[in-house]
Image: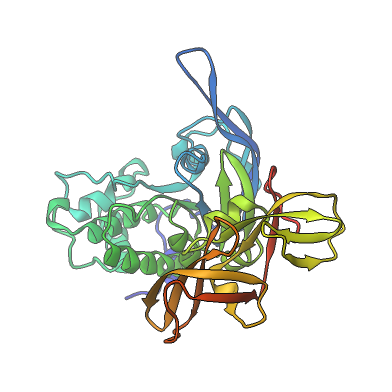
Amino acid sequence: MEKASNVISNNPIKTVHQSVDVRLQNLSKEFPEKNGKKTIAVNDFSVVIPAGKLIGLLGPSGCGKSTTLYMIAGLHKPTAGLIFFGDDDVTNMPPEKRGIGLVFQNYALYPHMTVRQNIMFPLENLKVEKDEAAKLAQEMAELVHIGDLMDRKPSQLSGGQQQRVAIARALVKKPRVLLLDEPLSNLDARLRLQTREEIKRIQRETKITTIFVTHDQEEAMSISDEIVVMNEGIRQQMSHPQAVYDEPVNMFVAKFLGNPPINLIPAKINAGQLILEDGIVLEKGYEIADKDVFIGLRPEYLKISLNGKLKTQIDLIEHIGRDTMIICKIVGTETSIRAIVPSVKDLAVDQQISFTYTKIFVFDKLTGERYK
């Protein structure tokens, strides 16, 4: 197979798009409702998507990530703010002029067309000669590993194969930016894993700036160079996946990332001390005003220790491969926590054990702001 770099550099289309950064400046989108009120889907959203990188827009359903993608694509007009591709202001530019490739969640393939015809379709508007279009379509099909399926109809393909056709169709016109809207949600677990690996491979070979929308944290963390966590239309945090996981800026990010989820334990800061519900002083030296907080402890941060200050009683033991998940209730409270520890044979339900920890987060109870 021809290397992707050669495929792109030999592109016979007159206008060859190079990867560019995507800058969103104070982007907002409001949708009117029947009662005269407005729904704010995206709220003063600013971010720079680096050229040639794969960036995941991650957040729960309704957080504004797909709306943001459609504004980048030109399918939604922003209520306020600007969109730049490199130095080009594309805010009011029609979708066909922006140089984007868009892959929808449902693939949107034409059922009466063959794979070849589906991939070639975007080239008709560019008035590429038929022979050149067929050559480009074959090159893109080879890139996504469906070169031997060109004469099949979509109904004759698996879900993963249909997804590859959609990606090839988006890439064939050499877009500056590739946009993927929940592209794996219709696939089964095995195909999701396989296809996300393929998407990462294709993006690395083409070096095209790619924005990938998903609500699946594992998907985003495995495929993305960086992730942008969104909630209620607002940017929460942007960084490398592991950095976001290890250093969440607030309680929402900490809760959204992690499986099993992070443990949140009610506590308070009093006279510079971090105090649990049962009165145990966990740590000292906090230079902040007295207030109610939540302690955040990821299950893998907890370690069984005879001298641990977290006194618990075991409710459930579940073996997961080489590790064991223990669900315990903190003694003197109604708070349960999960711990992931190396497999231990001498544990039993109702047994009391103590934990220490390798890392702790402290969040303001009202604002969710992280202190440590």
